[in-house]
Image (cartoon, rainbow, N blue to C red; front, side, top):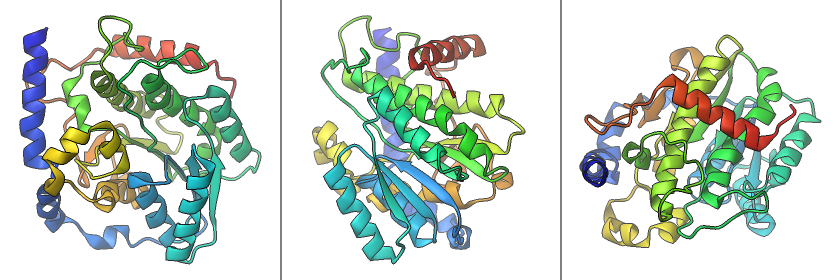
Length: 322
């Protein structure tokens, strides 16, 4: 097991250095069609979680600049209000709103989703961007390991609760989940809360990100034909406040090679603005293209039975009544 994990880490590092840096983005963008994202989103409702800084902020700003009505879901009220004010000022779009919600709390997620649902408005785009890498084991008020609570339970509960609103925006509704290349180092595991062995926040984060990609596959299968599509994506190695806080050594090592938050958000914005028929629901995207979900010889491929079992466990934890 130790040798397999070492190989996965080495394969991921080599793959990342080649593809995830700022230089790689500048090379990849030569094939981008900039007309793809010049889309008028007036009249479309978009929810972006974790949007007061980094990739979430740049996504919210980009969608607001295209005329969308944007709901920014942020944990901290003051930072959220500041982010909303900045986006209104920079885009001239007054239809930018703050929803305060801690994604580690099921009660707050349910309240936030129900609050939007009461408006009876269609939801065209949900961006599950909020994420966390906590290196110490922390248990939430719901009795959940904190990384798992935010990265998995928060994503699952928010998406499931908002599905009725998403269906109202069919056939152009979509859910975009911001994953991480770190998931390449992780197989799908039923040890959801890292109760086996010594806790490692970096490994747990990778486990969580693998689950996000798998959940996207499951949703795409379960809701095929409903007019709601599901995509996961990887932003590359971007210089964000979250990276600076969680991976300071990584940031220092790659300081001059990290993407800007705007570059990290590029594929999110692209996925939000393309017609669903041009995309493949359930797929994993990177730099505006479908990307592989597994690196060769890393042993991370899983069975449908394991995924179904994990989804049932998450569903049981969430106790949703949509």
